[in-house]
Length: 571
Image (cartoon, rainbow, N blue to C red; front, side, top):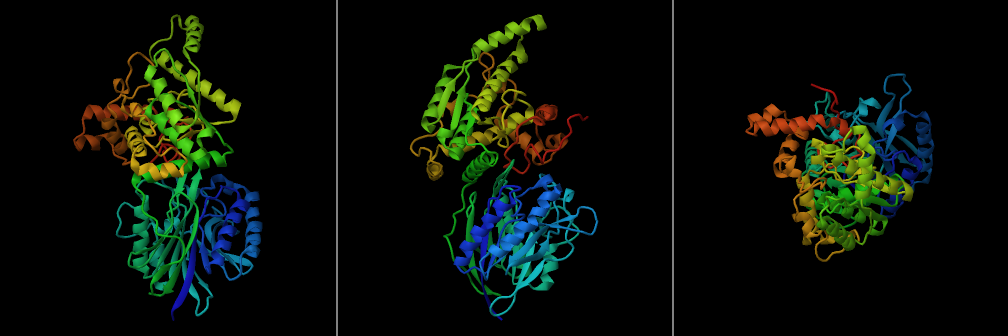
């Protein structure tokens, strides 16, 4: 018997641990959907908690609050609407890991468990086996609708990431999609909290399309959106039919509620809200995700304003643009801290950028402070500090000034270091590494230049307009992009004095860090042995610095932070 279903997707931006506030987000989406005739609404994984809740799951008082919040939500939902909500399911059998990562079917004044997550990822940034026990049954619920019951298959995030045709996927002892096939579902939904990484949207689509073909039914994929700590969730929820046709695509990097009409089992799919969303370019996607991650990190941590050191270099220029877009130019302050070694152009370029953005700057020369440090240290050292010691002193003076401004004015200090520098230790503890967030710490130097040049191009005009930034002309002065990278801590210094050119360095780092290649593999593939061994040595020796770095917004397959767990002391 045919079944006409209107199913909704609620792409939400939760605050971790705010069960009441997250429930209100679900309710707002539910009322919007119900007014449009939606019968079933799907929310992201752990939508009531926000993902990842981490050790909040160990607090009994927070778990007890969930029961009250769910009961209240069930009573407040519009009639004739069922909502799948990502929840935590306490288990009372006394076994280890007494929780399920689950989905609750809420409606008609009550709620019940619809599915427990089968596959629990414990790689990269994920650590779900620390908290959860896997479900042992396929998730299938029947929902009474006019005509006949809807057979709804319910999967949660990683449950979708098993496809026997794909290589290099994690090895699991069950295939949730295969186990659903004999149950003949009408629709499969996937409640997801999948962090952004470059190219990941395509992989999600491929997996959902494969599942739709295997089950012979549409797949509804609903992903969390927003930044939670160092993770950024891009949304990009969608509906795909068994032929691989995308019936509905939600926007990236912002909350949205949309719905489609499904003529089941094999009828056409009709979009009911919104218009098709054009796929953004990789640079546009990266820009939107970084703006989202920075804005949410500040907002969810209670900051409205930010400060950063403006050096006239490309890294601080990009961070300033991102901060202005995320928080508004008037909420961002740039501190210029020239020294005896600073080129006149650096100060001029920094001020030119600030003027274009409309952000305030303050100048605090550090030469007098450096002189005082030298005078104070001479008796202890028996000489004036020199070499790397003197260079690091300059960086640490700047870091101290920035922290003072942040403390005094209640601003979030943004670190401006990039991934190349973090990888090889070309950064100073308690100096340029100071900050509450490393905004571009997962972008290699070559990525920084690429994103800056896109930002200056006509292709970025729409995103600049959306962020309230000037749309005419270049945003970042060409002088900043054209000058050789330099820390300006000694006369005529260039980064290339200490490091390989970034065009040479970054591909080696990418293979060592993200592709898990060993130096021997790179050398066997034809890379210069001296270069590889030098970069490998720098990478290993800098681990103690990375342990003390601020959180890094993750935008690659492997970022320094939660998903990077290398020992400090090793052979």
